[in-house]
Amino acid sequence: MNEQTLTTGKKRQRLPSSNTMYEALRRAIIERALRPGDKLPEDVIGDRFGVSRTIVRSVLGRLHGEGLIDLKPNRGATVAQPTLEEAYDIFETRRSLERDVVRRLVERITPAEIKRLKDHVAREETARTQDSPDSIRLAGEFHILLAEMAGNAVTARYVNELVSRCSLILALYGRPHSSDCAVNEHLEIVAALQKGDSERAFAVMDHHLEAVTERALLTSSNHQRDIRSILDDYVK
Amino acid sequence: MNEQTLTTGKKRQRLPSSNTMYEALRRAIIERALRPGDKLPEDVIGDRFGVSRTIVRSVLGRLHGEGLIDLKPNRGATVAQPTLEEAYDIFETRRSLERDVVRRLVERITPAEIKRLKDHVAREETARTQDSPDSIRLAGEFHILLAEMAGNAVTARYVNELVSRCSLILALYGRPHSSDCAVNEHLEIVAALQKGDSERAFAVMDHHLEAVTERALLTSSNHQRDIRSILDDYVK
DNA sequence: TCGCTAAAAATAGTATACAAAAATAAATCT
DNA sequence: AGATTTATTTTTGTATACTATTTTTAGCGA
Image (tube, rainbow over all chains, first blue to last red; front, side, top):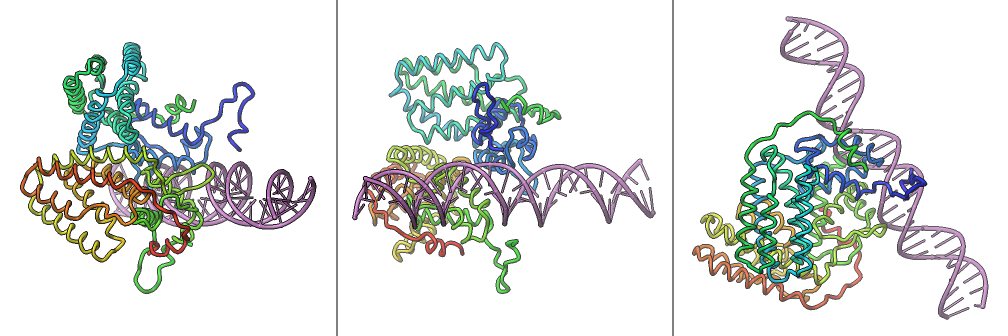
């Protein structure tokens, strides 16, 4: 039952290890295929990914540590449902860290990085127009990209975590079809960075995050869906 | 083999669950009983705490997620040894977050909280004079206390994590007998908060953290010690 | 039909068993 | 002796087995 022995003759695709399963679940949550409150039964997930509950358990523990899933004793894991209070805290901490990111970025950003950012925003744009599920993820990854460019891995990790949780919060409280990040706001941030206009970069980023926070108002409806079929798209 | 059945007749002490083991290891690391690089074999730890490797494993995973232990594939867990670069990032992020903590604390702190802070510093003082192993932990907990009072649970959690990792860093790079946090600096911060002097509170905190960073210079010598005997003090 | 209790099924928590890899010890050769 | 292989032991990675808890279903009586 070794996973390596299952490789087909064709392409040497290595089957989902613990890490790819983590990625898959994470993506499913961020892209809202799995929604806040959805149950995450260990055996169902294990079956779909072809691993035992042991592995599932460790991954669920990791996701719990990152605030993406709730874990109630004897009652299993569910996609996290942050309270409104937690939600505000998350947004606030995120703003604080991203302020710092921009502050440092204004001083050190290179033309190559500017280009990379522009490319990314372009991809956001196309995903948005095609109404792809990627668009939600890409919007978040813009902020993560900024954080990584700022050159502090610890801050980048936290920003990553917080941006992910913000996706969750928008899924919970946000308006159904709201665009979480206006693409043009991202463009404005890049433009300000390019000009080296720190004041403007600050202002736009802060306004941008304020706007995102603002959208956390309505409650979303939770339909009954089947986790098995949803996971099919993520098992790979 | 249920852990509850092992209760002795005397005091109904409930044996270490997963959580108390987590606390114990964490404390052992922060108080430098376990030092950066020390091996953490799963079966040894499991034996000492009377649980199976399954539990040990989950706890080690959690501590890894918090950056307190390194986890190399097939080679087990060791107390984390952050690189100098990581160390700088940790300190920088910590400063950024604690800046925010102080900013918000100046506006909302109550007399009762001031008193609590003073009490804490007093306890730091006595632990310091008695050269207790608690003194290291208490110094860190002052900062954690501040963060909790600021009213943002997410920020508080990050500060907690970062302060812990800073203990680790000082154990790795700090001068052998350096006092990590000068107690009087803590007192000055409290005083500034009491006066509502935000400028001064800022300045003192920043200077304080800069000083702490400063102490991360010398390399420490790693003696060979026996993990079994060290853990005896933490099994409870 | 409704509510209650009891049995059954499902699911999580923990320990153990076994496989794979690494570390250590022993053996062999030059 | 010293170095290099080979065997042994130790330790980690994963699956499975078993227990405990929760949830669901079935049965029963008012």
